Image (cartoon, rainbow, N blue to C red; front, top):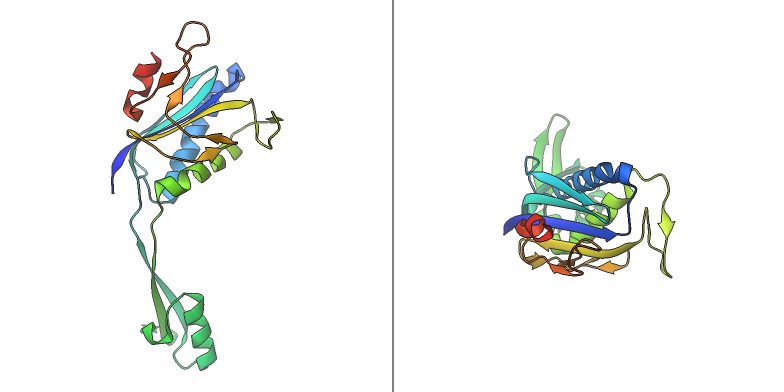
Length: 205
């Protein structure tokens, strides 16, 4: 399990200036919440947002590339229940009847299924976290662009998803992730490479 700073940047056409900070702040908060719900970051991890007229970005510290497995205990029917009911309970939770255990409860002795839930992997869930975050942003009206089905407040042209120095592969709004962004339209470089999530702000400067 490796922990590093996570950077997610959405490169867009000019965003509404009055809503820019609010959009970026909520974008960061929603990504942070999505990571917490999948046990990929602690609730006290530091999150921050960055924004310019053509980008919103979230940067969150100490994000894990994978979450630990979880042990789950599910209480089932009474040990005196029909064999068919107990077999159905075991099948539902993916265990053999012989693997069920017994537990004393206020209502009597019952069968218990103990299973292991595989922890989330950042590589496999980040694009969903980002997509969910975008849907929850306070946007009164979305627009569609190009020939695809993607919709957002403004057309999106770039996506950075970087965990430390590693690109997290994925696709959001039809855009594949990478580690390249763009500078100021007139005063900056047309393409900038972000080699490390920690260096994001300094590269833009």
